Amino acid sequence: MTIKVSKLATIISLTVALSGTLSGCFNQGTQTSEQAAKQESKQESNQAVDAAQTSAIKPVTADQLAPYLTRDVQDDVFYFVLPDRFNNGDADNDNGSKTIALSQGGFDPTKKGHYHGGDVKGLTDKIPYLKDMGITAIWLTPILRNQAVQGDITGYHGYWVLDFTEIDPHLGTNADLKRFIDTAHDNNIKVFFDIITNHTADVIKYRECHGDGNNIVVSDVEQQCEYKSLAQVAAGDKYTPYIPAGSEGVKVPEWLNDPKYYHNQGDSTFQGENSVYGDFFGLDDINTDDPAVVDGMVDIFNDIISEFKPDGFRIDTVKHVNIEFWQGFVPPVMAHAQSLGLPKFFIFGEVFDGNPDVLSKYTTQGKVPSVLDFGFAFSVRNVLVDQKGTSELANLFAQDVKYRDHDSDENQLLNFVGNHDFGRLAWYLEKSDHNYSQQEKLDRLTLAHSMMYFLRGIPVVYYGSEQGFVGDGGNHDSRQDMMPSLVPSYNDDVLLGTTKTTADDNFDQQHPLYRAFREMADVYQAHKPLRFGQQDVVYSSDKAEIFAVTRTLDSGEQQLVVFNTSSNEQSAEFAIEAASATIEPLYTIGKSKSLLVDNKQAKIVMSPLSMAIYTLK
Image 1: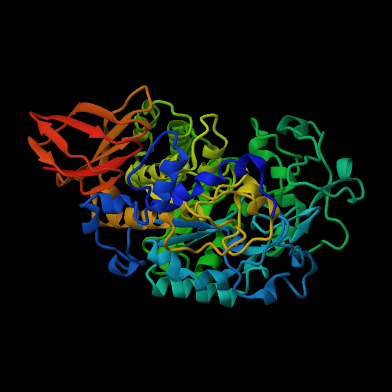
Image 2 (image 1 turned 60 degrees about the vertical axis):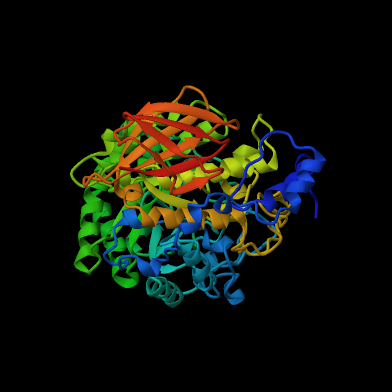
């Protein structure tokens, strides 16, 4: 195994992270070798052990929650996973279809851009692992049949759909998918499908730039055809689309094979109008302005709901589709799900933008019930990686009112700190100019996830985060294998909280982050204000110091959540509506600290990189 030189320099400190579970009694700053050795000898440097209150936390499994059919989405903890990278339950499907050439091949577990063999049978086998972590909803990347190979990369990620009626053969069969969903439901866990309406696989070519069709895209970022604007097209300056010989009729349903249902305007540069009308990295951009296309897409996904009974959809590339499409698509799909006895069917979208003005446009005007909160992800990164002031978070939450309408609000946003596109938060910590130690990376990563769980919104764990995965960037570099990997650039990563690498099986339920997420889920489920409470910021700073919010129900039940984002001890005073008292925390990360409330003025001292939750009277 080859180990990167920059990472080798930090491997000695790895056992420090190993010795602490849930990052325990944090010892910040530079450590001598003697100090490191002392920490290595501690078998239980566990924040849950340090805080007596934490020992009283009772595990809450999905079985103890409301039934999945009637459970509110704000009661859920999501797990986002790429099936191909999770667990191989059936090696017989590793090469995909045995009869359809376009969906065949691409299996090479040594290459990060190829299929690695994970499938829905493998996911089914690991449902107990997810359930034990407190997961109540599993979001899968697209599982419909893809174009398997294009140039030197493959459709392992699922975003090159050819057939909207069946599962990709690399992942199994429709029957396998139904068994997975049934097993999840038997465990009171929901299943969400990732769906795409913006584009299909790249089949259509343009005479003016592809010629006879032999100019094949060799990279998922290479752009082949200059964008033709709406004005150019109206003036007659447009491409002539065609389907290469042998590719006729490859898409299902049949209407998707007609070029008239596509924009055919060339490649997007993700600016201005071409962000909506251009081809997304060369993929065939569907003409979602056409009412016939709206109806066709509604039919496609209503049929999927009818056949598989998922609990909701995550919609890809929402901002690259005209907003009128969402207004015509979402209501009938939601209504169809409800007509089938799925009253809590939920849809959320990917709007790759951190600006609440942009994000909220789709949840209000666009009728999409919720979106992934990229603003949250970026703000947490700014605070905990770049050490910007906690006012970053306060400024973000000050705009939450923009999400409020008759059927949704900010509590329905999906919180996350890393994903399959821009990468893992651990990678940003790894490449930070602050040169964090392995222990401090683990501490900061734990604290970031506590923000994800306990600040307003619904938590989404990106697979592998609970095993300390780091990565080397976004896209393919953030899509490591949970099963033993053969990718050299994955296996030279120094993971956080373990001596393992991705060359090992990484389903360790004793990993400090797995255990931390388990406890966070327990606390999240045990205290309704943390899921439904109105959030008010009561303290922030223009420095990397303390951040505090209250979460309050209409009944008056209230919790105070406090974070110290500094690697030094910090104190704060702030006004709060609570009776005078000394209040012990119900949950902490780091050393437990009492909250002193006197004449509606709160005083608190927080240990480095810690957090605490208090019940206010």
